Image (tube, rainbow, N blue to C red; front, side):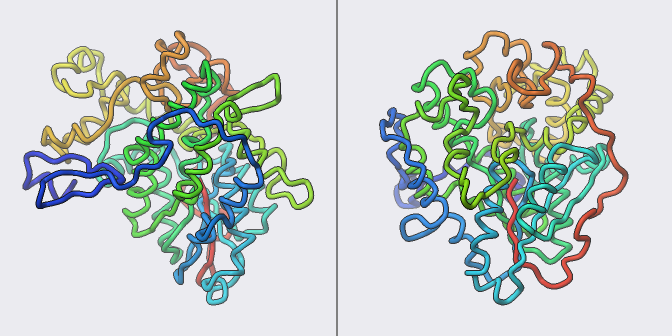
Length: 436
C-alpha cells in the first residue's frame, strides 16, 4: 500500500485465491475448496490421517515441505500448542533436509516476552524437551510503545489485536535477522481451523462453530497472516505457516465439527482434535502440560502487562472529548476505544487517503471473534476487547469486570533491554524452526 497511497486515489486489498485479468478487468477465484461454501461436513475424525497430513501427507508434507530451503532458518516458539507442535515436527525431520547437512542438525527456536511472561516459561520448557538451541528475547512495555509507529507503518493497519501482536513479533524479527536467520516457521492458522480461540467455548452448535471457523480462515489475510508476513518481512525475514498448507486445511476442514466443539463433560478443551492427534504415549511429541495448555493469544502470552501498558499509554494521549467526537473525525470504522483511536491517528499520518482506511476490517470483536460470534454471549457486548482475557468465565486470568480490568495478579514486571537470555549467539549458521 505504501507504493500506492501517493499515486492512487482508489485501491483495494487483492482478495486471496483470485486471479485478475487485465483484458476483462475482472477478478476470478481459482482457489475454491469444498469448505469454502461453509456447508457442514460429516467426515469422522481420523487422528492418524490428520497427523500424516501434517507431517508427511500426500505428495507434499506440510512441515517438511517448508524445510526445503538452503538458507538458515528457525521456528518462532511461543510455548503454545501450535508453535510447539511445529517445532516438534520440524526437529524430528530436520536431519532429512539439505540445510541440516550444510548448517547442522540442531534446531534453533526463538521466543520473546516481558520478563516473567507465560510464553517465556512455556517456550523454555518446550525447547529443553526438544533439545533445541533456544534464543529468548526480552522487551519492555516502553520499548514496544516506542516501536508502534514503525509497526503500524510496516503492517499497514490500525486493527487493535494485529498491532498488539505485531509489535513483539517485529522486535523479535529484528533480533532474528541480526543472527543471520532468513526464514522462520510459525504456528498461525490452527486456531482458525480448529476453533482454538476461547470464545469458541460458547458456540451454540456445530453449525455455528463450523461457519465461524470458515469466516476466520477467509479473513486470515487481514489479521494473523498479515501480521506474520509484514512484521517479519520488515526486517527481511520470511515467515512460513505449515498449518495453512492447502492439503492439510482440506482434510482438517472436512472433519465433522461435532468433534471440534469444546465439551467439558467429555474432557475436550479447545483444539482437542489436534491435541489428541499428537498425544502419542510411545513417542511423545510434547510434554502433556504443554500439549494441553490453555489457549493464550500471542499478545497476551508475551506478558499481560503489555496490553495493560498499551491501554494506559493510549489513555494519556486520547481524551474523553476526542472519543466523543470520534464518529465525526473517523466516520469509517469509528474507533470505540482510546487504544483504537490512538492507533488510528498514527495510521492516518502515514496513510491519509480514504481508500487506505477502508482496507482495514472493522466491527465488534471479543477474544478475536468475528462480529457474528459476539452474539453467542450477551455479556460480551459489554467488554468488546480482542484479548483472550475478554472471554469471561473461560480464560484462567480473565478480566474481572466489564470495564476490562485485569486480575490483580496479572502483569509480570517488565525487564530493561532487548537481549537474548538463552543462546545469545548462533555461533555457526543455523538450521532451525519456530512457531508462534
